Image (cartoon, rainbow, N blue to C red):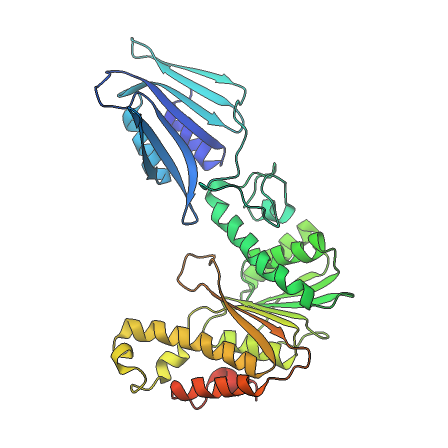
Length: 385
């Protein structure tokens, strides 16, 4: 016979949990809730389990982690509540403690439909909708085969869709016909590379030649294996360095997500030299400017190590944006939900102007920012010479 704690642990592990109801207080206490319900919700891109109790006309909510939820249930079932109803995607489970102390267990067909909306808000219309099986999301473990998003992976599901929104805005600025050539620098595990391939080939019905580049051989081997399993036409992965990569033909879109320190600048420099129509970059750690920043630059702020580091990171991205503008691009600085829950959540999105020329204002703005920061030369500028 399965116990409630075992069944709950299994449902949470397999992402089949929908709801839990605890009722029938063993010793009714005035002012205590006669019933508790628990459901998964999304808070700050993390799955939590909302423990809801009602006392009188007022509801009380506690948002628990996975471990806290399981521990709470093990403490109150058969101590405070005699009945438990566990709802999962595959079945309903009922547990009843009788006066003898024995717990009886019963299974029945599922009575609740899976929900993909874990937030308090109405479900957003995503480019990759929840509830519809998506092959690459299933293969990388974000979705179950039936299209349900795994509760523990819901933040990645939202992040992937947010990324696709940024890319989708660039599509009108790419060539309308022919094969789209894309280079993804530092592709890593390639969640977003596969998402990009899905957007361009499945949604926009375009032929593509997407090259994912990374230094780690085992990562590239795994990405290649997944691409073969999925039959991703036009998607290849290779081991290589950003600064020495030579593309085959003209590159229309260059992507650099979390390339560390000046590797982001090497990716931007390559994209500028290739005159890419569009560039997407999410910088990672940034040390160059922090190391060369003069003590005379905003000394009241930069004398504090923590503030100096954060200021240097923002200043570096501002320099990158202004430099792109000075090289014939129109650049936006946007907020991006990061994959690893770090503060590095800036996205640079640049679109090449039709003429490829910068106006005098862009050149002046870049020169002025360099002067304000007391910077005579830095990596991206040198890499483009």
